[in-house]
Amino acid sequence: MADKVPSTRLNSGYDMPMLGLGTYNSLKPNEMGDVVKAAIQMGYRKIDTAWSFETESEIGAAVKELIQEGKIKREELFIVTKLWVHFREPDQVEPACRLSLEALSTDYIDLYQIHFPMAFEDVEVTTPNMIDYLDTWRAMEKLVDKGLVRSIGVSNFNKEQVERILKMDGLKYKPANNQVEMTPYLAQEDLLQFSLKTGISITGYGSFGAPWHNYIPKDAPKILEDPTIVEIGKKYNKSSAQVILRWGIQRGFALVPMSKNPSHLAQNMDIFDFKLSEEDMKAMLALDRGYRINSLLLSAFKDHPFYPFEK
Image 1: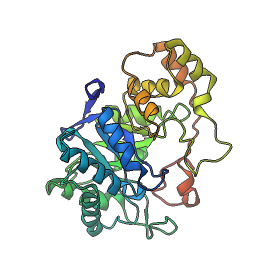
Image 2: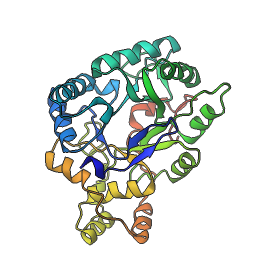
Image 3: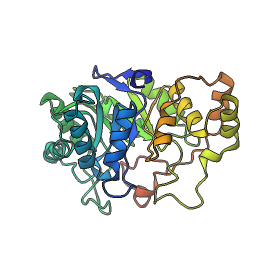
C-alpha cells in the first residue's frame, strides 16, 4: 500500500510522503509502539512525532524491532520530530536533537522542526523568554551540516515569521516544511499558497479537529459531522475522514492523522482511489471559519512579539 502514497520533493532534496501517522500522546502507556508497528506494516512510511509528545522512545523501539525482523529498512521511513520550546538557546539545540536521536534509535532524523516560534524557560510552557527563533534556526542549520538531520523546518509559524527566516542574513537552508493546524474550518489558504510559491511544503495536523484530545473544549465543533462533508462522502462512498484527507492532498499539503484503531488506520490510507470534483473542493473551502483549536496552549501570551496566531 506504501506505493500508493504520493511524495513531495522537499527543497532539501529529499522526498516526503504526503500521508503519514501522527503520534500525539493521548494513548495509554506503551500503546503507541503497537500502533506504529501496525501502521508501518499497513504501508505507512512517514511517522510524525515530537519531543513533547513523549512517544519517541516507543516509536524508536517499534521501528528497531521491525528493522531487526527484516520487515522494513530505515531508509524506507521518513521520521519527523520537533524541538520543544525550552531547548531554544543555540547551544541547547544539538543536545536536544541528540536526545531525540537516542530515543528514536536512529542515526539521523529526516525532518527536524522548531515546534513553536515562541521560546519558554520551562517545559510546562508557563514562563516565556525572548530567545529569537532566528538564532535557533542558525543552530538548526548546523545539524544538517553535521548529518544529524536531513531537513529542517518549523511548526506553528505564521507567514510573516517564515518570511523573516527567508530574509535573514546568511541563510543557508530554507525551511523545508511548516507544520500547522489545517482543517476545513481553518483552511489557511493564504499561508498555503505563500508556502507553495516559495517552495516550502506544508503539513497539516489536527485534520479532524482532534476530537479525542483532552485539551479540546467540550463545545468544539465536530468537523467529522459537518453536513457538507457528510454529503460529499456519500457521493463518493467515503467517510468524512477520507473526504477531509483527500481534500488536503488535492490542495497540495501533507497530512499526519492519528488513530489507534486498525480499521481507521487502513481507512485513512485508502484515499487514493478517488478525486474530489472542483465543485466539492470549493464547497469544502467555503467551510473555512478561521476556527483554531491549537491556540489554547499559548493563549495567555498574546502580547509576546513571536506569538504566531491571530490576536
